[in-house]
Image (tube, rainbow, N blue to C red):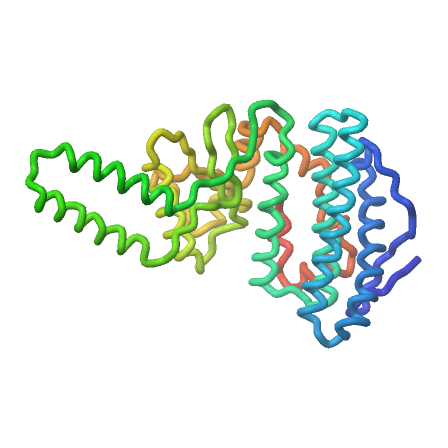
Length: 325
């Protein structure tokens, strides 16, 4: 069955009942066809409701519909994995494939509704790559890995203030002098907290009793100054939290020489451990126990998995470089 998407791009889809088992991840074509058929159904309903001219709203609604399909499939996989007692690696293999195929079809339909340009596509790839890598920690294949909730900045600030007050109380100073010290301390915090500080990053995972705060970046470009400054501040706060062993790590999709000076600033700070390209996947394997790099080489092929029309459009617009996972 040939189903025609917006912009004249044809998606080949078959209406089939997809069998879910532990080897589903080896049947990528079947998964892609399922997503495309469901997406085409959703596109027809969305267009009737929103109209063909509201391309931004249609694109947003399509992404939500395709992600909803993914959510249902992963829920079914998790339930079967529990019932049949799959290994953790069998479960992760299937979740990774369902996620990747979802990403492929979301890119196809979004580009057909509203063609990508440089900024939107580079940002979109970052939005997809980060949670994809995070699956290795969300569905760990080894023991001793668990997610944790990051601290609130207000709680950290109160804790640091209490530490300073306790220390000042021990100094051989008169009360007015102690009061002045605290007043100057308050001035410093006023400068630091002129904007709200968010300590939450992309991933917070405890591995063998060490708490790792992890940020994922597709790449560092010319507009990363504000984000770089925030990362430096956040890491310095984590490093100063007493009685906690935090390690701050950044994984970057691009190779190191493909990034600009903002990445080098983070590396020189010694506040962040930075891993780029293949080195990022090696570190993910070290931390999670799962060889994501090998999985990507074995299963991910954007050139063949995207429709020929969509890939040709991305290539003609110089966007294929962002598909180097």
